[in-house]
Length: 69
Image (cartoon, rainbow, N blue to C red; front, top):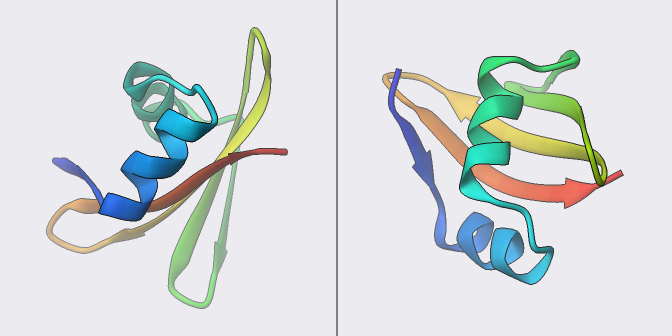
């Protein structure tokens, strides 16, 4: 499934120094996924800490934001 980043997500990824590859890996191989009000919250431990990606899924995965938790 295609993954699309919103402008907001792109800004947050750059600001928080998280790579696109880390985001994709967290979506494809999450440690935990929570579904709440139509959105998915994927969590992944990476070497530098734990990230969470909020996205919607329809014809493609639309990444809304990314942050450290």
